[in-house]
Image 1 (tube, rainbow, N blue to C red):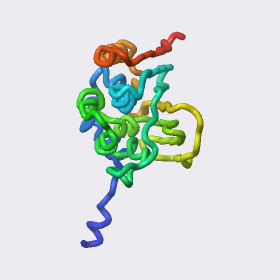
Image 2: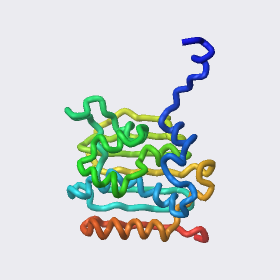
Image 3: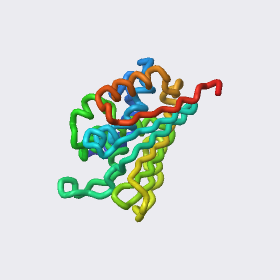
Length: 207
């Protein structure tokens, strides 16, 4: 290939693709888009809830800061079907990674249409603390790129996943999810999974 053409080739990460072409993944003009993006953080929890592995989900919205906590852990180890899989791929690879370890594909079509990797890409920051099967891991991302990955270590604490993230105001100027949109989404989820305990703390702007 001629050198002048080689200089024009730019390889983008998945996060860079999303940030340059957000319209391919979601409608930024949708008034409920921020709440829809926030709900992507529940994708794995919902998959586990169908099997009874996840029994409770807690959300806290404080300004633009969003915290999600639930009582099951994302898988930290590869399996025979996915020998090269890492948990970081869930946050880094559009579509494929989020679905690769999913047991109930209907979760993707109903609740995870945008996906966790797209959510991560439009966050100014996202941290994940995961405990699963006696092992634990912490990941930190900025604008969808992995910045910190602590080695997997041993723990005696119960399985749990904690996500903390802030949607990037340069991508979504109104980056605080609407309370009404979130409650409607949670009510819909509650009607489908009545045994799943769902709680949300929404700190109003005046608090």
